Picture 1 (spheres, rainbow, N blue to C red):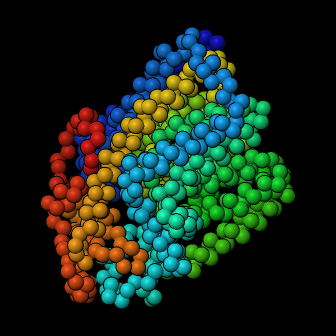
Picture 2: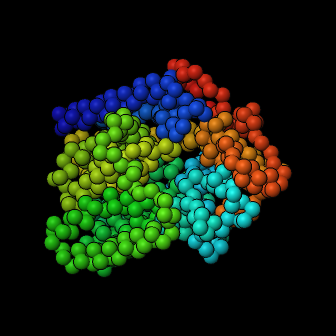
Picture 3: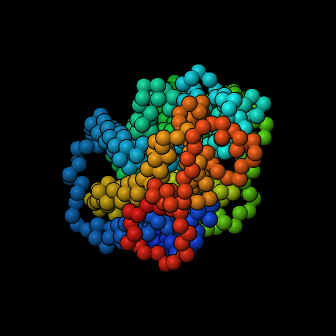
Length: 557
């Protein structure tokens, strides 16, 4: 037992060392041009956020890991504090799901200011508003046709032949938002999906370990203690929907050939059409291959038929409702992208830095011997590796995001691998020490890491939310901004799909004569200067790189 506990300590020190290297990287990056919100630096949000937030965020992870190695594996025992809880399924699931919903619903308003920070987030509501009108496309009013280029939001598809536009993504998540918009509750969509994810993961763990309710309890704690899971659910990203449907899929799939097992591909088809199809495809592939390897031909036939039918339907949607000039997903892939040698370790640091504090150790333990685990845990580990490995060949970093956004749809698989690591931890360090580690880690995650991450997210989002509110409250028919004057101000060019709201926000990039004439016909206009952008809270003045002040926590961009 002593040697096994020493092995656990070595893993904790190793994880902490890796995380401290990330602290050094964040410190260094904050002193470079890439780490500053400079208007001359395009698409640098990934590096700016890492430099800005990960110094302190990763310090918390490293401090917990080192502290756990030195002190938590002691003789004191917290197990008795919750000795009866794993036996009370209904209480556990109700408390966890309700707490997650409450935290994320409050965070939607107080952390994210009910504002869609990125263009990805905004387009879901853009398309939802079109759906609520009973249409798939919105027609651009005749007076604005000549100015479409400078009023079109990022990621809107425009069809010149019919003068219509729509969001570029697949429609299911926008349809979800439309349902909630119809009763003015769109702010509660992602919190509701987060609560559903907790229930589905708990049910999955109960299916996998039917004789061990403790494991389901641990899975719920690790998920509810994840800052990435909670903060992403405060946003309007589609990733919480991907996670919810993928976890619901796992719950059905893990039912082991019972009737509800065959509902999994139906949920999978919905998941493919949420936003981008690759998220569910990467997640589900190892589990589907398992059906073939185990020669469950009836299940293979049913899954194949439903998935092929669904994929054909979504492909037909793309053909029908995407403009002829739309790019292909392959254009974002590269056989070799040297940037990923830096970006992927940073992504791994984000995944560790935004997880529940106990999760990195448990995940390492789970991955150490995952091929010896029961098949569904092995497939969950492969799902994590496939999802993470795919983005080695991706051309772009994730841009905006809280934690590792591209991995978010597979987060439940990582939790299941960590639960397998939990059983390994009990074998190596004993039940009392394992519970000490988990409970202290959960408390520190919710009382230290989560407030820190909420403060970081809120201070970053606030200037953009204030700027957007300021632009749309101006007494003018047209408000013009020069995106070159303020960092990421191009994302402030946001107009409702029917151009009914005033003012219309225009990007004053070099204008063609026809565009200038269209804007003149629109009526009263107002130009936002560099100084006014600065007053709105945006980063406008180029600054020379300098070594970062790590105590600038809470300052906006």
